[in-house]
Length: 470
Image (tube, rainbow, N blue to C red):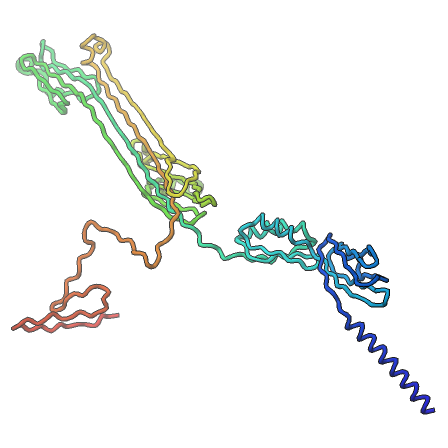
């Protein structure tokens, strides 16, 4: 009984050993890795005649036995699969197949679209991943939109590069305004102090005429007060006739030149105003009806501009220069308030210039002529003598405004560059007078004042120093 039990146990142990050996042999078989891209095929040359083939996922990788020793494998979709090949002799081979995206066309498209960006594309199963560093969020969004149709899902892991230091744009503007005023006046006044027993005067109204202060007197003589002798004054006592002639020609030139320089960051608007403000009374309504408040209006030279440096190295400018001057000739008086008018010259434009180039963005010429004529009816129509009874005044004003713009891309001074200095026409502050017995030392030398040297036969007076109160 015991002998038969022992023999059975030995047989069972041999069977277990055979099973364990077979399983260990199966687990010790080599597995070959194959990486394919979607839509590609490869051929496996098997060393022996093939008996049977099996795949774990035919939707990912399928096979076709071309000959008894050639196997054609098709990569159909993303994923992994295991292919087992049995030889007729009983030998088995395992192939681990991984099907990935065909990344080369995608990389070429991204590289051609963004040649200056660092964008890498990786694939994991049916998911594409974008990694790397781009210059802006706009580039990241465009890259994601470009790759999204090429995969089932796309993960955007792009990082933004630190912002670059913006360029500084210096705008040099020159305002040149030339105003020419010219006037001509001609008039004749005649007076008679008793010529032909007649006392009187004639004037065309263009100039002030003498006024008779006393009429009559001895010999029918009269006395006239002359307030303005005009240009030419002539009097004949024997004839008792005087003549006043005004023939003037005046020319005036007013030139305004401003050269403001303004620096701003690329893409940021900057403006400045050189001038002032003047008060304007405003009449209130509603519950405060009748109350007067004062508002201030600006005048002077104003400049606003917004630069944009392009990739071509040019500077796009939105420029708005404006010149406002107070015009007292057209002022308005309301309720005892005198409100001046504004003479405005305004330009608003967009231009594009290269660095250092100049452009005239505005040239305004205003030419006005005012002619005033006064004459005495009838007498002014007498040939030759009619000019004595006429008065004529001609005013002509001509102004021209020119604005020149020059943009420059500039950088701030470094720590080693010399600092700009302001040159004063006169000494700004005189050096302090030293205390008795103390000599001056250069500013910033760090040394203390030294007492003056003692001369022979002299003694130095003591110097009292009081601590500075905090």
